[in-house]
Length: 364
Image (tube, rainbow, N blue to C red; front, top):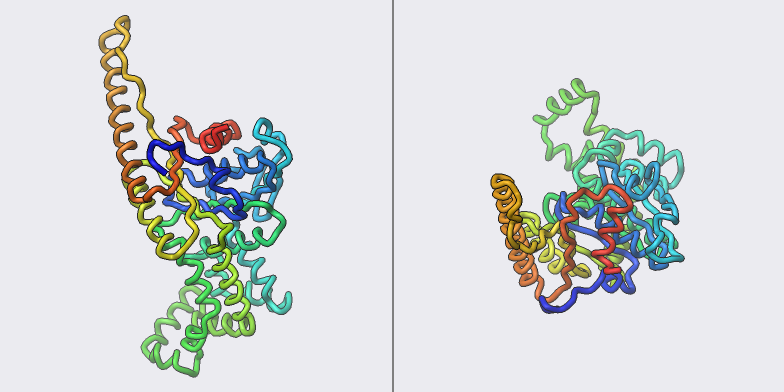
């Protein structure tokens, strides 16, 4: 696609897709972009689920819901008025702890084993605090919903510090849950204790005295409880990999035109290319568009006229910066689609804001 050609619309980018994963740095509008895409695709007659990771809890208000939780809730149909007919929109607010618990309930051989695992101290840390749990559960929820009867699932991903973090964290945690190396390491009478050495014992004893956590005992109990379940974790990991690489999955890169997020976007695109993931295009949010400069009205007081003129000059600088950065992004993408959303001058907090964003992405 050349710079002069009209960019495709979101429906064109998502033609034939069942999964849309919105990725990118934090603070670039991924949540509202995912919601606007979901609203628009539901308005075109599809049954859509949008999964968000939004600590500010703004999406529920924007969609006209009292609350969101870890299970899909249907958005009132009147929020799709003017966007088409026949579709359904469902929304989910990811709860990592509950998603992890639900996974254990599904793969455990009995409810009693599941309850015992969930009481384990190591499990409680993994499911609520350990690095990578949010990314792992986001992908797990995506997989769960892709197995349901939705036409399209849109995922708003956690704000990664870098591209590799989001893509690698689920695999690292799955390897931890399913790998035999760590279990061998932590066997009290085996290689693990010899590796830890006698010098580690006072440290572990002190940890137990201060925190009440018997790390070695909890780890040993945890992996004993997982006995027989590791193959299921490995199987799910392979199925998730298949889902992420499937031809009906689309990775949409969301960024702003500012320097740092744009550099992250270029890096993220290279990571997707390296890993062979199905990249579909980029959406650049909050783009400053040039304004017609013209003349400052002569009937303004001199000080106010000077202020207006300075504001116009500042705006022109920002517009030039954004245009140059988008051209740099275009050059690195080598013809891959880039959609632009202008700065809407306000945070998108309600359905009207989502509709405004929708008009830019769908050109309706």
